Amino acid sequence: MTKPEGTVSKPGSSKEYKTGAWRTKRPIFKQEKCNDCRICVAVCPDGVIFGANKKYWADLDYCKGCGICVEECPLKDIELIVEVK
Amino acid sequence: MAKNEVTIEKKEKEEIVESLLTPGHKACTGCGLALAARTVMNTAGKDIIVTAATGCLEVFSTSYPHSAWKMPWIHSLFENSAAVAAGIEVALKALGREKEAKIIAQGGDGATADIGIGCLSGMFERGHNILYVCYDNEAYMNTGVQRSGLTPFEAWTSTSPSGKVSWGNPTEKKNMPAIAAAHGIPYVATASVAYLKDLEKKVKKALEIVGPKYLQIHAPCPLGWAHEPYDTIKVAKLAVQTGLIPIYEMENGVITSVRKITKKAPVEEYLKLQGRFKHLFKKPGFEKELERIQAMADATIKKFNLM
Image 1 (cartoon, each protein chain N blue to C red):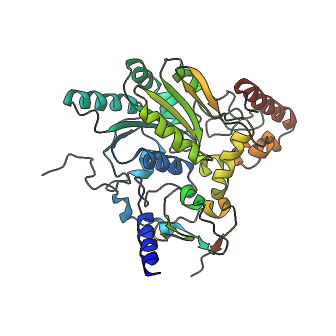
Image 2 (image 1 turned 30 degrees about the horizontal axis):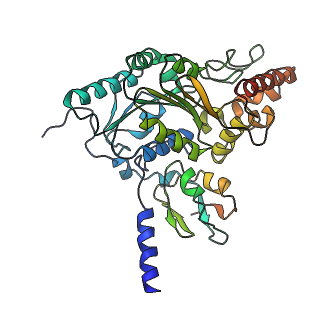
């Protein structure tokens, strides 16, 4: 079937583009004081923080390193480090 | 022990449920709008049909040939997000399938308060069963920070620059929720990305009400407001705590709930985080202008009984 011009038939296909390449800083989840409040999961603009039971991680393929999770963590259990190659 | 491990594993798997606005979209780092849109979509669930006006949201989420949306989504023009949504609603009714999907129309502050206000007004007037969401980042960010009807008083934008004579935007923020409420629609609410639980509650409530609904979400823009990307939530919170952005709900034209200010902050605290207000701390005579903005915040607090 030919598709009409200007349509995208694959939902969620933006995942093919990895925005992780934009990043200069990355969040490190220290997992020392975490109390499962899940604020980091909620505040991520890209929705790339996953996990449960005091174990959380950011999907570094897409994390843009904005640092909102670091700033908003009430227990300061996330750290932002500069990525050096 | 082994049993316990299985449940943990299962739960972790459940936690990798992806947003309905998938990652890989091209929003700037720290985008408040992306956060607001993601929260609205995830709260509404997958049985929705979404329209979007031209603007940042449309541009960053659908750069051809990719789409970040996991539901039927359509963008047509800058002004007609509400009209397209109205057409979808009527079509579903004609097919007898109106119970199968909820309809959400979206627009930025420019698309809502300036360009698309005619179509939006028509949607309200005809009483379509649609939730209209306005993402308010207070200027046309996608095209290079031009002033919109919802740009706040004395903010720098590229079309209201501050300089020797000018203090930035000369007009106050348009009271869009009041305009929506004046149509006599059943539900009008404002929200902020700083209070996501409140936002979720409002989206859920709005989708249960039959008729046109209007939700305006205050969403900071690190690029246009010139603040640090990690300060997005902090800036949004201060906007509410200073009283400049009131968070409230209106049902059938009557204010039914307001978010009280827990710790009142002076407007300087909110303004100094943002580059678009930096002239308010430099130019001679700035104290008077800050007083004016503080007076506006105090008037809003009094009007909505925020304290």
